[in-house]
Amino acid sequence: MNAAIVCLIGLSVFALGYRFYARHLSRRVLAIRDDEPVPSRECADGVDYVPTRRHVLFGHHYASIAGAAPIIGPAIAVVWGWVPALVWIVLGTVFMGAVHDFSTLVMSMRHKGQSVGTIIADVIGPRTRILFLLVIFFLVMLVIAVFAQAIAGLFIQQPGAVIPVNFQIGVALLIGYICYRRGTGFLWPSLAALVLLYAMIAVGARFPLSLSALPLVGESVNVMPSWLPERTVVVGAVSEEIAWVVLLLAYTFVASVLPVWVLLQPRDYINGHQLLVGLALMIAGIMVAQPSIVAPAFSAAPEDAPSWFPFLFVTIACGAISGFHGLVSSGTTSKQIARATDARAIGYGGMLGEGTLALLATLAVAAGLATTAESWGAHYHSFETAAAEGVGYFVQGAATFIESLGLGSEPAQILVTILVVSFAATSLDTGVRIQRYILHELGSIYRIRPLENRYVASLIAVAFPLLLVLAGQASELWPLFGTSNQLLAGLSLTVVSVWLYRSRLPWIYAAAPMVVVIAVALTAMVVNLADYVASANYALAVIGSLILALQVWVLVEGAVVIRRAGQPGGSAR
Image (cartoon, rainbow, N blue to C red; front, side, top):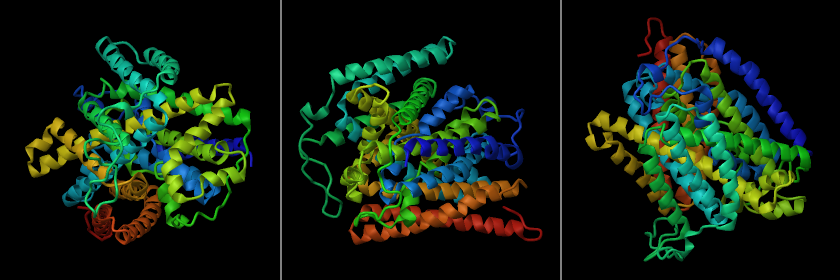
């Protein structure tokens, strides 16, 4: 099968979804008006509530949601065949994921930019607010841990990407100062920064940086308790992976406490351009190379792989529907949206962009990684290998597409690595900032004053993922992350459904995907927990059990509210 044809079909479905379905949701379901008030103007504070131009905010939102997850998930899920993976990505994005992101953004916008975890107290009940906040806390902890490990692995595999990525951070700080203190626009400075970033690829290739030469970085010796999985924790030294994770989390701590205009917005705007350029290069490369898909359309997965149902759907989490996106929509984006009608392009359109990335990730590992079915099978001979090497496979496959445009192999791989790292780092920053909000809310509820301090809250936000990285493995964290992520999406859609129901708006558009996602994710979570207990992985078993119990409790509370509201003389409260 020609990958170019498959790519065009997928992109066409996305375009039709935005043209017709998103417009229907905007006009008939969510009833958005251009003149309705927005939180960025009503609650403007210059730190979190900042009216932002649509194209700038789209860059921030897009970069925040388009992390490593829409790459890792498809790169693993192709073991079950590229056809089911792409069908789930395309249809899931149009009818579920984009609906989730769009509706949570609008709902938060109409609740003064509050997070879904806070809104649930008004929509369902005060008790569910604490439950939901705890669910979010555990999920964001997994997000931070998984993405930190992914970036660390890429820095180890492609040390030539270290200098360009860090160069981008410095330039973003400069642009943030110039644009907000001097009143200049974002566009031209960010385009200049993008050109300089690509120029730094040559510098990175000439001077690759590795932490392995540092005095405290060495071979790993396990010193964790016997009841925890074997991990790279050492006496007198740490592994290079752990060293990178520590540095990344230290950076995200600093980034999360800065005002959004200092680093978050300018870097995300640069990343927005970078992502669009990267996607354009990959699409152009596919059209020029016309590669054949050598991966099987439907595959009998390796023996160590779980059943395709339900794990195909939760493995491709962010590439089709993601609860983390609802946290971004209601946690940061809703506080910056300048006009209500911008929500369609940012919420629905942003998810279509992520679906496009997941589409290209699938084609990269299915058509770009190898030229024959035999050589492809050598890469995907086991599920464990796919889980551990998926990001690297994407880098190789996507670089192959870009090479067809005339770029050399090493620069192409560094370019793709920078693309992945930049967006995973953006998700890290956003995740830690969201975790700070969550801890602040919990602190205000229980009157724990230290949690209301942004520095203390941010420190806690990075400390727990670090402990999780020390205690687990990426291949073990990913199934729990994917399952928890989809369960959170189901819970967010539950809140949206109840909100629409109480607002006398068509609620079936949120309720239908809610039922599907929750049914699949609950099944996957039960299987995950059984596997954790069987393998004596009690740390993840406890975390998964807590997430499952909290989410089931929220679902029961939501069902009770809907039942009461449907009774004669009933009230939703």
